[in-house]
Image (cartoon, rainbow, N blue to C red; front, side, top):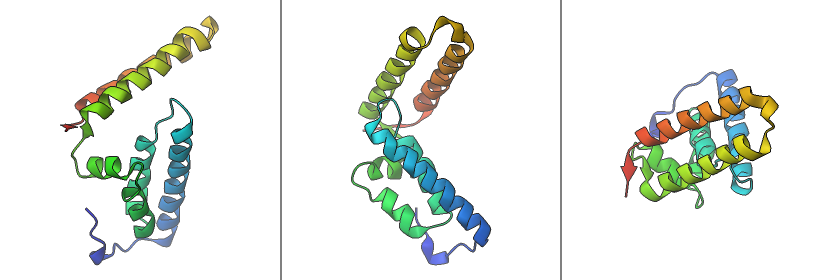
Length: 134
């Protein structure tokens, strides 16, 4: 996975861009640890992709993290998600989607409700097509 022996030459502007994106995604992912409904692993996977292109130290910090590192590493290796994690993702995702659509948003915001529903369907499709690991 990590082949840093052949250091990738990258433009310094691009390196700053990828590190900035990675730090932003990491921040959102860390907030997701304490905010229900905001995923952590998805943002850490995206952050790891940014750091892979820019910072070996930050990339290794993500994939070696005790809390989410194994999930990120499994995804990056193409191993998919454990069945238990898929079930939890479906449950939490649809709980908060239905809560938002049914109780939190007023009936005036039908366009937003439709957008949330479509995003939920896309997320469900994406998780479904991932390989399932044991």
